Length: 158
Image (cartoon, rainbow, N blue to C red):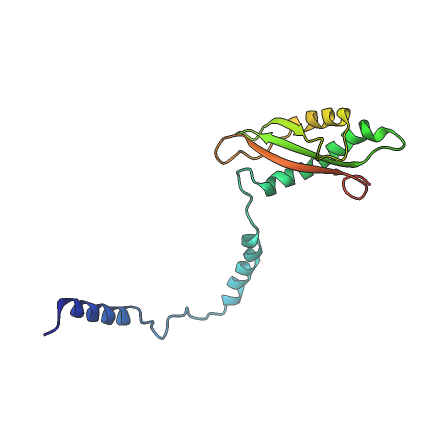
């Protein structure tokens, strides 16, 4: 006599073997318009492959947003530090604090890590950045986002 657990194991194996067996004709029938139906699916494939932007603040959408406003920062440079004939160039290290609603709460500049130090430039940048809008934060809390503005020839400057 066989034990109940052995019978259960044998029954499971038999059920799985017959239950999962594919029929010989499991593919869809071929038709004349199959090529026409495949073309739209192929056209949709690149659109599906594109990555959808997160509604929440992340490094990628933060950087894209800042880069979209680069012209404002260049204008600040030209109106302040860039006026002189021998205008200084360099990098400005900033931390932009974005609140839960995506509004800029404050912007700070790190003069120790910045190679371009100009108070009027910092004031203009702070005013411009303060008006920017970002995606909301995931947890609704303030999110400090670092960014380095490269105000050198070949970067943001011509």
